[in-house]
Image 1 (cartoon, rainbow over the protein chains, first blue to last red):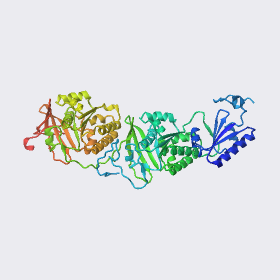
Image 2 (image 1 turned 90 degrees about the horizontal axis):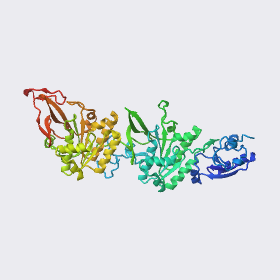
Image 3 (image 1 turned 45 degrees about the vertical axis):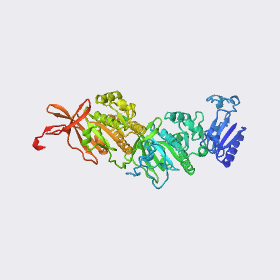
Image 4 (image 1 turned 120 degrees about the vertical axis):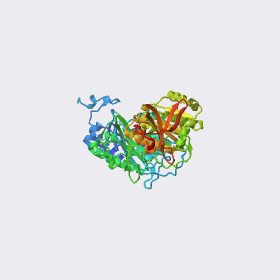
Length: 108
Length: 516
């Protein structure tokens, strides 16, 4: 999974990155995290329409998912980022959301 | 409040409702940023507190976004760039909507004078909130846009939409508070729009943010009154700074945007002129001891058909004959009718217009609101720069507004006509054919320098016409009620009515010779 973490300052960047890696490794997911410090790269924040900090966007697989907040509640974060979903290799390149389709992991 | 002396100077900058012309005073205390929104700097007595946040509160449809957009557009006209943060409408929509007012936002963007920060919701990018967050992303984006443009003004539209995007209202409140503090630290003058709360709630804005975000609150209203829409702006508070109190009407016009109409606060400090000008009628000149004053406002009142339009025609023609520029606003008759009437009295309006001495503006009153008419009158005066103006009639305008709106119109009209120092003749139609008065007169009589009454007089089984100069400030005048006749060469004022009384009330009675 590929994530972008929008943070304010290097400290927050390290914290969020560590938390995401931990969440992924606990689930056996390979996680790749790109950190954007909005203070240093405001143009990227503008492009991505980021207001709340920290914001984590799951870039891949699609559909994108967006979480705002300090990621304290691991169960809710995992759910919101879809970390516990079925490995969705068959929808990897989908660009459009497919709500109610196999991405929900219904057919175990 | 009160009368402000700007030295009575003639100003050269001729913006609509130019604030120098109507007197803006500098108040010690918080420095103010003149917004440049026509008329608004007068109400705020110099502008909005510089480097602070002002909350702009109003219900849906009260032109908050346009007002805020104008705050930036007027800044650009003064060489100050602006940043527009939108949480509601996408930037593309705003660009198009503001374009209908004649603002080319896209060109300002490419000239680094205007930046959008588009935080409007994008379908499919909904988020989930888990844990604490702040608005550092927004602060960084604003900071970036300010760096790029050297902006001094920021608009955030709207608070309600911010609350709509985030689940935790407490966090949003505290973050908006921090945002306001951050923008203040950056020295930016900020306008934040917010939706009005329901009247029953007791709060001002729906999310109650005025208590902690803004020291300054401006309220916009758009109310239905006697089936007529009336837009007003009111400055509720400017912390540490003076402002004018009460509601001021405003209008939104293509090419100009918001135009606030300053009323009671307009300055009446002009030194009055002793120069006389002819009324266009030799006998009336005699009755007024030499004509109207150069910078006076005269009201001619009478029932329909008593000769008011004729009086205006003679007043205009006399100006044109002396190579003065004359501006005639007609709200009762078409151009053709007016020209034909004038021709019938031996005055060639077409020739005057052709030679640029006369400008005739004939408009049907119902095509626009009173505020729009007032701005149009002002614009015409600014453009044509007349020495004489006439409005025939105020009563025709009276029927399109509320009583309150009309009173404000009259005050606004007389105030800037006085500021322009032109000779003005307004007419007012009385309801009753004999005697009578009109609401128009009630509103305007104290604001005029002279009043001429035209009346039908029923005498010996015959309807005749009488005229009297009821008042004339600073001058002797004839107090007789004089008979006049109208023929193909105009108005002929003759001797006074003798042996009758009650003409002004419409109840004419014979008076014995000894009783006179």
